[in-house]
Amino acid sequence: MKLLAAKAKPGARVIYTHPSTGKKESGVILGIVTVGIKLVNVRYGNRTEPTHPTNLEFDRSKT
Image 1: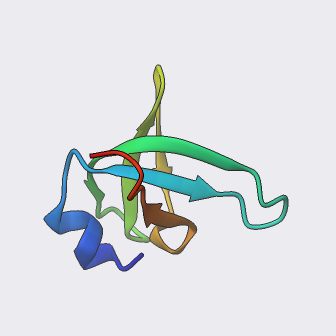
Image 2: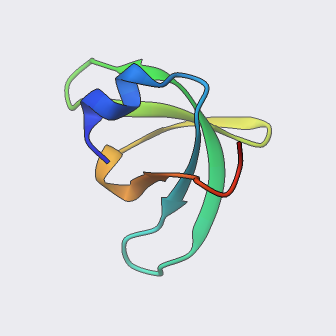
């Protein structure tokens, strides 16, 4: 996913894919972190993690 796509859709459901293991986890975009490297703030259940946008894709199965 591109950073601009994530920025345009706060609240959208996404799927994170871990780059080395391929493990997937669903989350929700909260916003963009612009300090240093630009990351997407994603809520995964009860925790929020800054995530690199290339590891995210929109979850098209949830509407």
